[in-house]
Image (tube, rainbow, N blue to C red; front, side, top):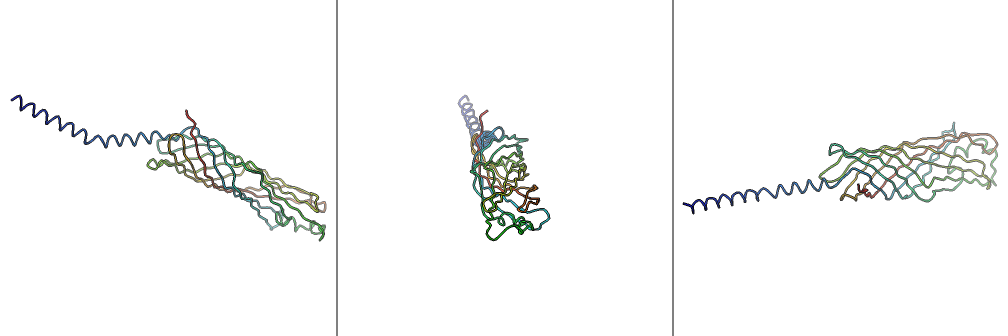
Length: 256
């Protein structure tokens, strides 16, 4: 009788162990996956750096004229900055960033009509310009373009990726200069905060490293400045500018 009891007890023990072992892999896999997702933290401070393809556009004219002349100064720039983000309700992310695009000063030279055909065609200019005069024009953009932005995004947990929308502003400067036979006669400077809107994606690989890709579009703004023209009169010089950008950035999360 005792032998029979021992046999029954052994069978029951084996069934219990088999039941536990049969269900545990799923439990362990679920816990492991959740632990990996929790280990990838989206909130906190980050250092960002990377490359930006800058596509600024400058449109010049004079008040009262329908002639508008556009120039671009496309180039690559190095981007550096810091970013803060906070996860909300496990699926959403909000954040803010301060950055700057940096490169050598961009400049383009040519004749007046290449930069502002309306200024070249103004009555005073035409009456004073002779065939022997050289008309030298120049457009210059600042070498540092700061940016401040805020963003909101949705976390795709299965892909460990964030899709985001951002809004902000860039600080831009441009300078037009006009010279007649080697002597500068006037210059116009535009300094503006340019509103921007952007879209992008952000991918985290581990607790510290990740990268993002973003596209930014400007709401162009204009500025006016009264200049002396060739004949001693005045014109109101107008500049409208904005800048599209494509960015690839690497991020490093600052340990807390």
